[in-house]
Image (cartoon, rainbow, N blue to C red):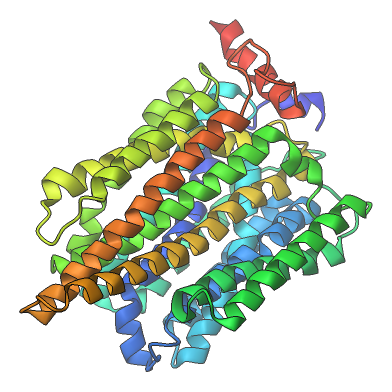
Length: 506
């Protein structure tokens, strides 16, 4: 990017942010909105219990598997164009899903949503990365984006509850169409892409094939483990295939002239620390979404709408953490001092939720637990989103953004499968231990279910503590006006340079 392009801010950047945020909200909503509608859709379309997970998995596989390719297309083809095409395709795929007459049409539409989601998500984040060049403005923009990326899933549960209860499950698909069209038209009219940000080097086909197959195998292996068990031969085979394909991908990227994922994007210790800690935090969080939804609906007997609203404290915490704590402190303290304590605060919230029992009080345990979880995650997401694309050359912005999304998507798929499997085995163990003295089989089943959730949530606490430790250890960029705590990487220098702007302005 030329110097002038870097110093003169885009006059329409705040309008552009509104449309980018709307698109991000739609993509994140879609990860959870269908969860609440799934039981009704399953009955209507005659989807078997064995196949119902494909409504979720088809989306996760296509999205997670194609993100790096989508990020590279955005760098090659132009972010604005990729973003608009992704939005329009997503709207068409959603219309197909809403009109589905059978399971094949439903699974196909979900996979198509994933394909177009993989185009628009990296384009959205990389547009922000190249449009907001001033440190304070960048902090504010990423605060809004981070709040949506984190809280959108919970908003999906509320909206999914409303649409399913008062309209029809099909509206959980149709609702995407106005979102997508407004965002696409707005983006087309408002976004101006900075000059010189394209990466026109030829496409790395072996990299595309290996990364897509490797990520799809990994996501599928975890999803299969949830339904068929960890010792299932196909599950083990998929894990082995994923490891071989992803190792081959890394070997290929280190040799080819214009790699799909330049290794410089992930080998920087700061960016690597962000991708790793963010992925772990999402593992903990997505598993919890599922458990709390089931706990509130099955154990507490909440309606879909009431369940959605029960997630409000997490959304409030998330927005407060992102926009009030993260965005205000981001230009004043090193990122690790926001991310480390942020993940730890979330772990404390998760710790409260390990106390779940059949008659747990919502106000005494679930509400404060969610609030702390949201506050911590919001505070940590904020610098993570900005740091993941900061100091990156414009030509790599799409791929760096795709890596953030990949760690979120793969983390979400792993979290749902891993924590679900832990919960299921703990539930079975509880039934075996307590079956002899049980007088009410239905009560025993509920107690066993809650015991399984609590066991899995303990794991989520550990995962969040690990995310905090990784953030504090690996991320070493300095605070405003200082050098990096460790060896100066290109990103450390970039953040330091950017953060000098507001210091001088004071």
